Image (tube, rainbow, N blue to C red; front, side, top):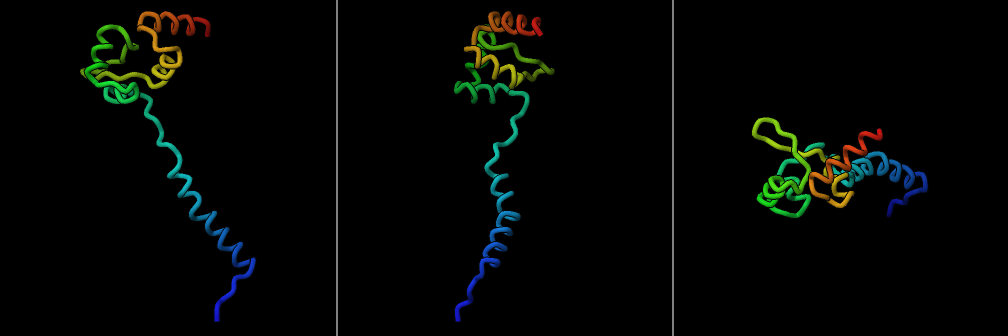
Length: 105
């Protein structure tokens, strides 16, 4: 004899799936939180260039100035996102535009 499922049984199964499995599946689909600071390697990955190219662009004034902590450097993710959104201008042009924007606030 084959067991039959009632509508109530199917509803109970659906409720259990929603309660137990759906949150776990949604958690896997959510992107990982982004770190607020980027290392040279992370910035290189974001821009699709090598770490050596980041160092060269840093010395040439082509990217925003990093924050320094001892021998380590990092960039604000928010600043890099804003810099890229503005067309990735040279550091001097970026700093002037950023300073004008901050002065208006």
